[in-house]
Image (cartoon, rainbow, N blue to C red; front, side, top):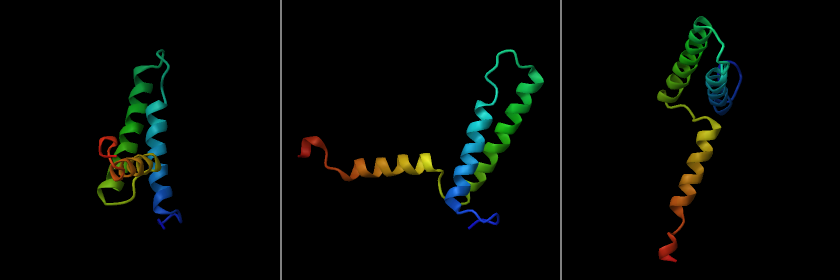
Length: 83
């Protein structure tokens, strides 16, 4: 459990979601430069938090855990040419 009482997996997912939201935040082409800079700063901070989490050896966010499981399953199956 994290200090906030969440599981490490949940915390990883929250960090990933924060980054995803920050990256999607401004799609309005009429946004001012200041608004876009602020959105970029939030995305940069969210990326830094996720990066620190991952480099400390903590769990991956669910989308990445799922992709890792799929890749592991594919590698475990014999190639079609071997069957």
